[in-house]
Amino acid sequence: MPKICYADKKFNSKSRTVIEHANAIIEDYQSQGLTLTLRQIYYRFVAAALIPNSQKEYKKLGSIINDGRMAGLIDWNAIEDRGRNLNTIPAWSNPADIIRAAANGYAIDLWEGQEYRVEVFVEKQALESVIENAAQPLACASYACKGYMSQSEMWRAANRFKNYSERGYKSVIIHLGDHDPSGVDMTRDIDDRLYVFGAKVKVERIALNMDQIEKYDPPANPAKLTDTRANDYIALHGDESWELDALEPSVLHKLIQDTIRKYMDVDMFDARKEQQEEERKQLDNVSEKWYDIQENLSKEKSDE
Image (tube, rainbow, N blue to C red):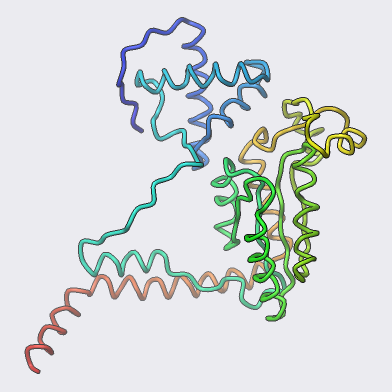
């Protein structure tokens, strides 16, 4: 875990305590195989009543954590910016390597023969990897909508679900979003626009809902009064709102996987998974014997 010092910085006792708490949160997330965003760290601080819930405190925490990373006190790999990523071009040392990589990535349709097709949609890109970590082991596609889903992507999704229907599947979208005027409305918007495009899809909102707010007591924010949906929201839920990021990743992970399994024949899924593993082993054997194959190909060429 790289803690690399790039700048000599002095910290007072309060800032050192903040860095210690941040490292404890980071270690907990890493033990779950998760990488954090700064906002997720912030909400862990707020939920533990270590700091007030305000934009000023968020910026202050970000500044301390940034200085802590520069001073070599916080792991550089522990926090990621999910909105900015480098697109790379893969390269291989030899053909055996790409066959080995193909074996690791080889997948069959694990949902073939099931009654349902399930996809997981999340409002926020910042939670994309959390959602993906829950959905991927169960071979479910996941998508970060980045707010209201674009018309182009909604149309593509509708066509995808119509294709599932033509093949005899029922379609389900599991949706997660903030509990605020727009976040709640986004679930309705997905349902309505898919219907307009002729797709029959069950849209199930699993978070963030009032029962979870009552159970987990995440920190509240004022409902945004400038949102055109604020009046209807306040009439139903009051003048507070809550962000999905405030729920522990482990809670979201379990919630997503439990919901996916509701729509899955687990025995059928496991049998398909065993078939996939067997076929991956066959590809692995090819990669291990690549140099023998290469030698035989060279002999055949020289015999021509």
